[in-house]
Image (cartoon, rainbow, N blue to C red; front, side):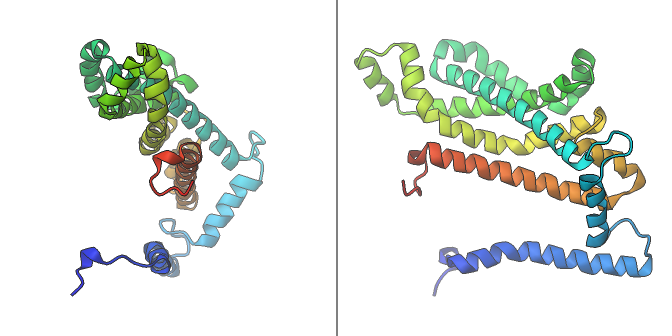
Length: 273
């Protein structure tokens, strides 16, 4: 008798099983929406797809009467810019700190405990401090992403650095490599694909910090728009925006995975390169 733990679905079945939960959610939403709108045509809790399409069409393809901008695309560009800048800075800081603390014991001893403590501080608790120090502009929003993401990346890179076999370092030193040559030519190439993986894992937190900062103090952005229209219970705008954020997060994660595969095929055991 085959045990369930040993059963592996075929590719077509795997695709079908992957689509099934989304199809069920869609059907449940359509049924619930139709039922609520049948009782009250002005119900805002579960808008129809027609209502959501009309709302997004107005935001995406009709210029704002106040600013003349296409708000949907302006919000998207503003949020992506803040996220990209914050994650980029966090990746550089996290990689540098993680690499140095993982490779050099004299740096690890004073920095690692501090890094651990910093990583335990809730970044959202620092948001008022950032607004006071940096103001309500772009810097405070980017700083929140950096503070929230960089310690996670640093600790992950630190752990990966310490997991690299000691034999590699001994061989490099036997061949006359200095400390910095070992860091640049032995450790860094092996850690780059792990950095991309760490960034992928931190994207969810990055989006969270971004949306929170935009909701509190901003004049544009996806988070700003969601919290602006919530006072009117405009679910026909909120739900498409949430779906759009989810799609953007998925596309960014997919792109990073492809970059990792293209640039470092040796890191992926399933790669055919």
